[in-house]
Image (cartoon, rainbow, N blue to C red; front, side, top):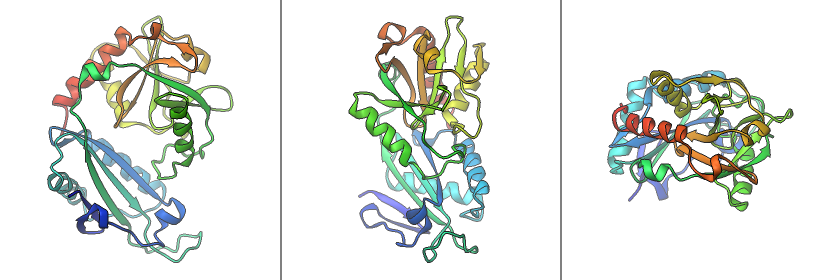
Length: 285
């Protein structure tokens, strides 16, 4: 039986529910985080919780528990009850329950929901398999730096990508520059062996896996630049890949109808995958 956590209760996931007037359900007035789990441990948990704190603060949603330690205890209990060694944990915090009206009435008690699932352990050889991405217009709201549950634009983009035989959609702003994927950050490698990813601003979510990859690049003497890149530059790049807590590091070998790195995972991307795999085995807390 899969166990979920809802507002202080551990309950069978099939029976888990929130109030029909929860503002997360009515207005997407909520934030979330997704944590990778390796060897029974949450990967980059402090960085994820730092971002959760920022998202809550930006939306003026109160902290859902008395302390970060209390929140982590519940997260680990959800993993324990579900016997998760390798997988993921989903955490959502909404503003709470109130009669349906646009203004925040204030004084609400946040709703807290957690679920968990199993996956296979990180495997470098499996991670080396390349994926296709397709381009799509970025029609999301202008505060993508806040990790809200307002994901409909990403859902539509990713659904269309899958219908077109692709794993992900790379979103384009009005000037033709790539912002990020529908559920990931976008990267390219130039023929000068420079690692490029868009700088963090309100147009993208500062991914935790993105942050870790930048740290690994710096620690291993790899040159990286945070700047925008166009779809045309991406298609002409030596290599490309995408990162997220669920996709981890995924090579991109085709963008629309253009093959990247001759349709194979390039050496630079392989190095990043190997570094990230080593980090996953030893960098969890």
